[in-house]
Image 1 (cartoon, helix red, strand yellow):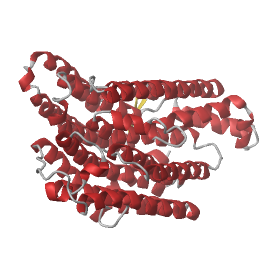
Image 2 (cartoon, one colour; image 1 turned 90 degrees about the horizontal axis):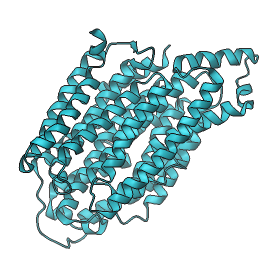
Image 3 (spheres, rainbow, N blue to C red; image 1 turned 60 degrees about the vertical axis):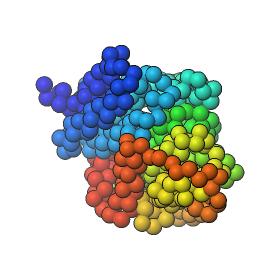
Image 4 (cartoon, rainbow, N blue to C red; image 1 turned 180 degrees about the horizontal axis):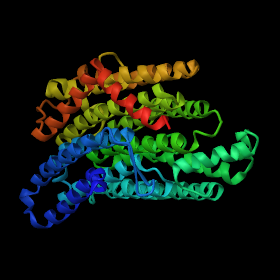
Amino acid sequence: MKFLIYLAPEITLLTLAIILIFADLAVPQDKKEYLGYFSVAGLIGAWFTVIPLAKQEVSLLGGSLIVDRMAVFYKELFLIVAILTVLVSIKYIRDISRFQGEYYALIIFCTLGNMLMAASGELISLFVALQLGSIPLAILAGYAKRDPKSNEAGFKYLLLALLSNGVLLYGISLIYGMTGTTELSKIYIEILALTKAAGGVTETLFKQPAFALGLVMLVAGFGFKITAVPVHMWVPDVYEGAPTPVTAFLSVGSKAAGFAMVIRVVAGAFGAINIDWPLIWALIATATMTVGNLSALPQTNIKRLLAYSSIAQAGYIMIGLAGFSMLGISATLLYLFGYVFTNMAAFTVVIIFSKFTKSDEISDYAGLSRRSPVLALALLIALLSLGGLPLFAGFITKFYVFAAAVERGLVWLVIVASINSVISLYYYLKVAKIVYVDQPIEKEAIPVPPSLALGLGIATIGIFVLGIYPQPFMNITQLAAQSILIR
């Protein structure tokens, strides 16, 4: 019975998703909007089942699943993402599909997969969780069946996700062949034994092509999930074509799940490899943030701009991984927490605007401050936070990942990241200039539905709270980092 208590959040989500699928068949079309509110209530209930697990350190199913502070942090984060996504979807999804209950169920299945990814202590369970978190996303990306761009987005995401998952699975098979196990803690011990047998020279492992290739394939598979260069090419087309609430969910939930996998696997299994992990992550971070920011400069579509911005943000997050220490991991987690609120705020404004105007072109945002001062202010706050300006979540989260890099002696990486931040401010402020300075093409006021207003309000408040008073959140992330780094 106690075993079920540890899995209460996952069981709650699974039950909620099944209820929604059957409820979608029974509830009349004009009442299906209430399924969204029911989903929010269920997700909040699941969030409360996570709280009692905060101080637990247990291994379940022979090490396949781990309940620790790291897993609990991510579970709470994923549930916040799901709640905000459902809130901003309620008025949107009814216009593109009759199957609203299935839509919410797919979001919940994705959230369930993400939670299992963060808690996986073994590579096969991690891979299965990855499928649960990825396949529903392909369906969601193509959920607007009458929109060719949505169909294209769903098809592209499915194909590339299958390709990356195949690469990841082949990498897992190679690692298993070399170590004889897929459990992360046992891989760690086996690598230590192999290193000791080789006279303490870890590099000897890389003279074995199977091991080196397996590790490269794992990094490539994870890179797709976190939108790292060079496996980022799918992002702009999928972000532009998918329904905007799905894009918001993909940009924060999927990325956070990817970083959960990276932290869990690198720290749990491959931390014993005496290679320059900080330099590897620093180089990937440099390429990712630079390509993302430079590609965002010429964009004229707001969703494509935010897509390339999302790639750049992944680069900033990886700076914390470069400083793979207590401060580095906790800074990475804090950055993800702030990024959830910031990106959800930006995409909520895009959802409201595109629903009313049927346009995602940046030029059509001209004079938004006259048409809807609240939306304009919320978008400005989100953009300034993404740019890393003070008083907002983006500033304090960048400060901590930069501090982690400096602690590791990676001052050059902080300089590169600072230059990239300046570049990003150009295209963020370009949008702000269009919103506040340019004359509006239309003068009709833009209404904000209550559910979207609530989601936007929560996200905007989150940006300010984290930006002004980050210490309680930093304490939480430090405890989570401690649980993964201390053996």
